[in-house]
Length: 487
Image 1: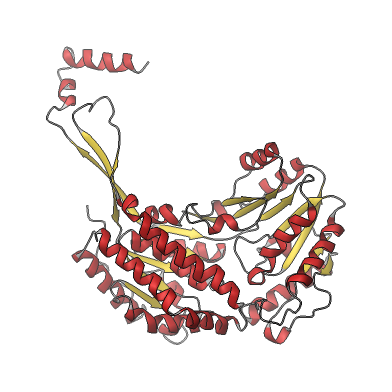
Image 2 (image 1 turned 30 degrees about the vertical axis):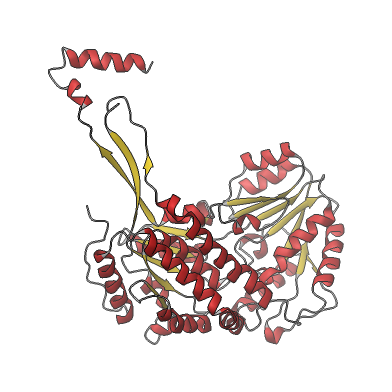
């Protein structure tokens, strides 16, 4: 059976650019259904060159989209990660593409053979969020190209400058029938491109964004039975155990909470500290923020992406205070710059579940802090809520680490630090339940965008011939032997 979806008459409201690109990519795939190692490596090298050749322009475009995006953070979290991932895939690709021999069961042993061969799916769609727009376009694209697919990318409406730059750059590195990028400007006036993009009958669709939008994406894909990978979010907890130095935990938690102004899907969304140590943690946090960011307006601190998100965060903060939370500025000497959407970090004490900051993903520089008496209470709290995208435990106690690992479920875990599991090329990244489905990065990304095709090759002697009717003679004796052997 063909791995390509049947020809469909796409809805008339889809922009012609989308329809034509999809048709061209599908036709190109039909002519070259299984690119070899050399072609796939050439594609990955082209992607790597795009990042290296245009580094300054890419950084500048992201900065313009944010209004103020730390140059260092763009280089570290997006360009470096993308370049390293592409080079690693080039090195690993021969092993990933290799057929995997599989053992045979007793009914076929010993003269037949079985193996699994990874094959490209076809045309892959990638929907990119605004918070790490280069990385979130490049990382899944690496897996898709390594697997031999064609790729169509839809950028966020908040990444207009980057989208225009990529549309201008891509023809130097890829044909449009191999990789194409689309922006909301490509839609008709009054239209949003995202819902239209996800109506295309892709062979796989990769989406990164909010759980609410993820549900709509999955519904659109259901009409075409398009498989999806959903990288969503949720409320990721951090727990500081009594045995771990509070100051060191604060250093590592504040690093990720200030990175990209907290606009990270795997960020610490709320923090558990031993009861009675809340104020001490806040004091450490204030010292750390002041040391690392003498000025929040000096270029190292990133702005909130747009006015709507800035107002949402301010409303969250106001709601928490109105319901009894204590808001503690973590940089008391800095008011930020509301006009530029540079929002100072704030710790929130005395929070409860009725507050918006404890109900919704924060995606910004607000940090609710809860005191706890026992790790059993923490486990019960976490397990009573949807599975988070990440979990962070600070403890040197191996037994306690094992309890959290075995008694909770999350997309990923970093022990004694934050975020770093998400940056390892050889660890799969992905959510579970409300925080997403499917994995990518490294080999898992290659597998996500491949069909693992099982193949059985019959040998000269067909074992099942001994199990043919009439069953009363040899067939029954052979079956009895097999059943006895498996007692």
